[in-house]
Image (cartoon, rainbow, N blue to C red):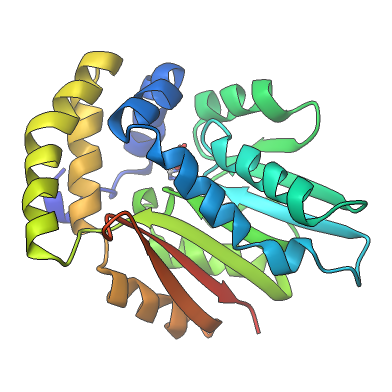
Amino acid sequence: MDANNVNDNKKHIDQLFNSIAGRYDLINHVLTLGIDILWRKKAARQLKDILADKSVSRTAVLDVACGTGDMITAVEKAGNKYARNKRIDITGADISPTMAFICGKKHSAKYDIVVADVKTMPFKDSSFDAVTCAFGVRNFDDLNKGLYEMIRVMKSGGKLVITEFSYPENKLVRFFYNIYFTYFLPYIGGLLSGKISAYKYFCKSVKVFPKTEDFTSILQSLHLKDVKHKPLTFGIANIYTAYKP
Ligand SMILES: C[S@@+](CC[C@H](N)C(=O)[O-])C[C@H]1O[C@@H](n2cnc3c(N)ncnc32)[C@H](O)[C@@H]1O
């Protein structure tokens, strides 16, 4: 697999996440010093208008590439904050059966967790009021198809909230980022998971993912409205928001 086409193999992605699933949460929190939890919290709070909408008695949220379910936890907490006395139904979908299994252990008593490829999700058109995806889109083997499908299952007026790593624009930030991503992250991740290749893939996938402005343009090209992005922690990640017309 070359660095310019890191996601070309769907089975590879599936196996890669299966192989690190057991220690995924711990490694995430160690590698980001826990900041990933705040990022998801901030992302989930972008759903405030949808969650607080009193004109409906039920809000359905789909979390795509849900992994072990940390974004679902964040959406649940945002629901408790903004959507009192209202039913919030959360569904999680992930291509990796092992990630989905761990997510199911955390959340299946309350929510539906399904094993599904984003390209072929088993949901009817216009089923959800909002679709979230945290650190997932970078891994899609076909980004456009994945985004198209996320939009298909969303209702008109629904909100898309995508959180993803970005390659920082600022040269100084980029300098330290490169050092961390080249010399520390793969080895700490490798040591904790026993899968250094998984964390080398992680670094490559961030570097080849479209730049912030380019990803914003991709979302606009899909006819989404009011496309915005909020940089997180010196621009090393971004929250992208948009509405389905
Ligand atoms: C870096 S993890 C992020 C997990 C979780 N959203 C979080 O915030 O920690 C990326 C997830 O994307 C999933 N994934 C990758 N390609 C996918 C696809 N085509 N369809 C659905 N899920 C996919 C992986 O299995 C993995 O669980």
